[in-house]
Image 1 (cartoon, one colour):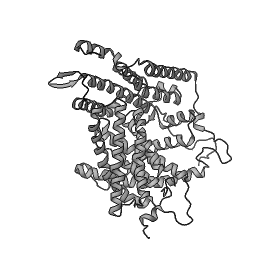
Image 2: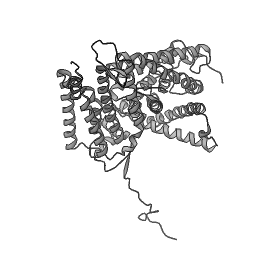
Image 3: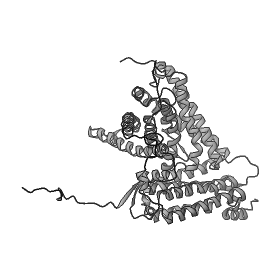
Length: 308
Length: 204
């Protein structure tokens, strides 16, 4: 019989090195350039790209911002095919916005009527809607970029680095984690039903809808049990709502200690904050990014002979 | 086991002390998680622009405040910020602007059930009326009015388009609230009222 000593390994398991990282919307290779930056830098990039179109009414600039988002997604090695789930919403938003502005353009007498394919549209509200659409899409892709390249832990580290109170950062991270857990529970419930012979494909749409509603009943029951388990676990580990330990001192933060701010983070944050502030001031006080400065708007008004 | 009357559900027993604790914070997070899943699926299911033709998230909002008071109300305000971002139905600044309406959409039902001592398990006709009026119709009317006003303020729709958007929003939220919310309240409330996380008051 072979003698087992402390130095001999019991089993030799094949080691598999992770090559990709799970994000909130999929997976991204570990060598994605985004991961060279601290989570707080990525969070500030999210705020920058997600909010800056609010100050920009010129559709050309928002279109460029959209391209910047797509380039960043590509640079970050995000599988762009995953973005297909957003295609219906991108199209339906356009259909909704333009249908509404055609059917209900408003009653301002200064509006210029134009007949296009036998339909009367009014130039001013139509161009305004066109510009708003690009603002919206630019903002949406800023959000999609963040959720495509970050995991809930990145969000947690980002919030804690920004000195967000413990209870707030904990609730946000647990809620995002909980969403994943409920998806998993949902899958288990469905598989359990299928294992008992339920064929949802053979069901009518109304029955499928009813079934979907009934899934929520066990999901809520699981949530109740889980709330008890998690709160007991937190209590057993001495967690308090204030984030301080029992003696009153500050609780050490292991996750945050694993991430270090580097020079490139400070440079990136400085650039993002400066551009954001400059754009906001330029629009609020000087109207630099107003719709009247859009080259396309100026061109169309010139050829259609529409006064400003 | 004896069944509690509607008034007993909301009234503190003699010597009973209820305080907010970790279980409420955890429930807030888990409830937000459920809201994220339900809200995201709803927004992606039948999207018609910023307005979903079927948004069951509102049912979760009303139920949350009935069961967990302000914790459910906070979840009602918080989860659309994330679910709207994940589904792409509204960018973050617009979702932040919806926040007051989302809080109200959540809290009106919670207030009404406590104020009028309605049974969350919807046992009587009175409970049903309170649920439909304060859990579905009124919150969705307020939510749709505020939401479409914000869309106008952000320049995403014209003022003239607001009534059409209001109608789509109101109907798209009210129908799933009545169907989904009623079933959940009926079947899950008996479990919830016996749990530690249930709030007789607004915080505990």
